Image (tube, rainbow, N blue to C red; front, top):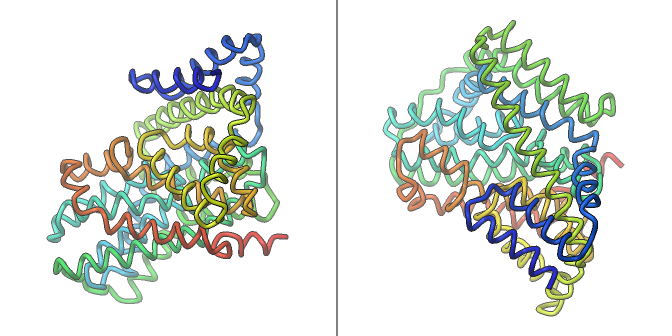
Length: 425
């Protein structure tokens, strides 16, 4: 009955339009009151949830991403991608995917990727004769790379929710799956472009490609500093995030000289708001997760799944389907904090490494950002592209399938996510 009270209050809060963080907190308070537990335990869980040193990296990552979006780094990455692959048939679609892989691997945010690159590429693609729905669909789905390819603040949330696992292993585990997903999306973008008869751009020459690479190199170094600092052991995740933010300020002000004072203030304000939202989610989800453990929800779910099938392949498919559905209707950060303590024990019981499950979780919930009814990236892309969501969704299925193919490969072939982390041992 207590579990029904917990999820009943949470579901009612979401139905009434309450923010997820408040719905989680209210449900946790209701659960504590129903069980007769002292409320100070709940507040202790809330405080302990945000009293984790590695969480300090999140505001630095978010701030660095905002600075790069406002300071011209995205423009340089787009030029580099256009010089490299723009000459293939329907090349701007492939350019879009490659730009997302480069920028997403620096900003770590799918929504920032959609907003920054969409503002640059979608108008250009429309002017070149590409249909608006195609331009939006490529931009939206390729932005998922920002969640999988390091650095990703969502992976830090998963590491905390999973009990403090190695962030460096998570970062390096996302590299191959992120590239694999972008490769699948690039192939679909090319296939759709050929079917629709989109044009090819003229190859600017190797000299122009070299110049574009040199110009984009300072921006690309942001990811090298953040990821390289963590993987080398020279810096902690938090320290690398701080150095990354400092480097982003130096590049956008001294090298590119495009970060204006109003843009800097906007980056600060946006970063503070996003960080506050994430931390509030972490705090309330910590109390909510305490009750999930009290009610033995992971054990109940494991027994339920085992009762349906004892085939690990079927069980993993069911977990993926559940995560995909949940990703369509809830915020990603909240789902990471809620689903990790529920599904991770089931996956580990099947012999899956927690690092591999983390990558699978990122890909599942990342796809949810691109799907209705609450896909944030889909909303942003449609606003930038000035089309209705219904128009975009009608032709987005091939891009969904591309991400699903990559997801299935990562799920059933551990080497895609575990080969590089195994080299660290």
